[in-house]
Length: 88
Image (cartoon, rainbow, N blue to C red):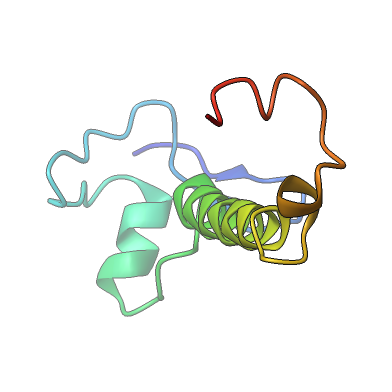
């Protein structure tokens, strides 16, 4: 039997000896046993990463739209020479 290991917030985590693979849970791991008995999965770094990335892309699109708007800095000539280098 594996020893129970805890995160800093006190929640149970997978032990170092957990043999979970491809979603098949290890019945000897305390966290896997907890999930087999119906505990929900926790959102990890992946969901936070993808939400942050999605927000960054949206902010970048809005920034470009504002820059290239008809009354924006690009159209009025307020941006620098790097931005306007290839505008013929």
